[in-house]
Length: 447
Ligand code: GKR
Ligand code: MG
Image: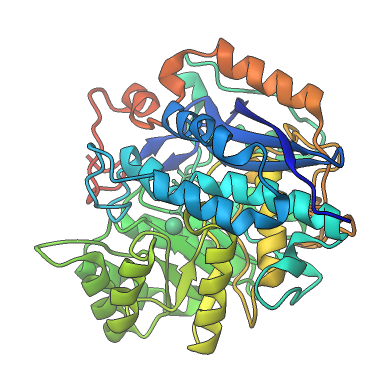
């Protein structure tokens, strides 16, 4: 039978609700946005992909349609390569990447054609009756993928007059706590317990870059005391100075398994250089989603031995690119993982397929989905149980779109103020600290 042809392509910008979670970038807004690609083919199958939100990415995706419609699904590599060539360097792309977590640059790190790659592989998998994981790299490496419990400090949304969601899920402690203030080590331990109660996580990551590094490491210590067998990792997104990072990490060495981007560019040295020195001084493994977001950056990070774990988010690398990285890391004795941003359950399903194809011992995958759980766009949202998601038995991406929910999320996108389309975490932050401005070297609440 001939491979199917792409018949239609729709792009849906969608929005969902978020908590007032804190990071170096400031405070998450009441809404987050994403873009969905929905393809149909000549066999009547539907293929889906999810990528970061915002009009820049939406317009890019719309511009791909003439290059996707009419193409044979099995030619997907060729289609994606051509899309990649359409994207030249943009004028306000500083070339910095997200080395200093300037989120206005995130859209240039995101590879929007990944949403097309995913949707085409979904269709190809359905045609061949194979999951996407079987089509990537050397095929399926595991049947279950472990995720980590991604913890955030949370501010009190009543300090703002913004429409933060409240009371959307009273079914358990996690549903309640994820919308409430959590700013102390004890509150974060309770947050972790609630997340473990619902999802069974074995390992945790704390988003740092919010409070003084010593207080954040106290929180790590409290998490370690509460979950002595869990791997605990903290990610201050490169905001600590190299000296501070070395000092606080040495003080809490027995509580952490690895550090994610503990320090970044400073005094004329790049993040790749400071992380290399940090590793030499502490012998603590380092993960990154900031200093190795493309192959050229990775080459220097590898040469300097700056990192041990590359969080090769498929949205930054493509599905095949992320697996190419996973293979190389495994061959070089390094470790693959994935970074995340706020997302819907289509991205969660994508992480499962990619991680299932990553060879060797991988690190538990990041996901923000627990903060969005209940707002899924699928009829069969992947379930995190015992900290893991099983590779679905259905072919392709292994999940089915709920079009009613997609249209509702698209309606919400159109209803919200356009100021929310592109991520800007300073607006909510200014309710807490008037005039607050992002500073890549200062934790959000240290001013
Ligand atoms: O969701 O605010 C957030 C995170 O801070 C995100 O922007 C980071 O890119 O999760 C990410 C990370 O691991 O650095
Ligand atoms: Mg990170």
